[in-house]
Image (tube, helix red, strand yellow):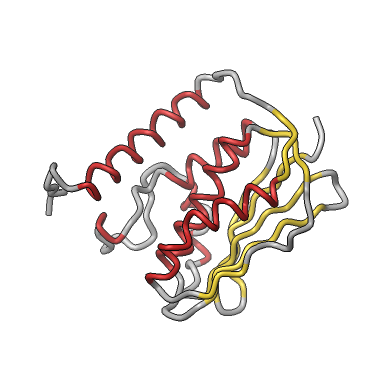
Length: 188
């Protein structure tokens, strides 16, 4: 089936503009475009993104647990980190079990990074697919339609952001769900 779209639909135009924005951002990162690196509280940013997405979480009746309110400062491009958080949280929304939990954590590590994680209850990703989810346009559930969410660009963008910021990212199956994480240096 081909992707069909009612061009007058706000949902469709929103999805298309988001996909174009992500593709443009991926191209800018790949071309080495200048970043705006600043010191900011990533916990506050995380909570703000969660707050903005609250209406989506209400749709699936998920319990949302924000990170502890302790400030954690990092040096990074806040726009890029916001994109990582939005991607992880939106993915969690699409894959959380009905009535499940979406939680966030922000913790400093011993090696000079801040570890950000988003966990959602739900089905795990097959272990052999975990390395592939970071590839452009890769989707774990080929039967899933575009209307159900996702373009297959988001996690490849997260990987590019991690590489650009000299950080790291990953995903791991945990008891009852899956956790996506991102490590950011806490100083320049």
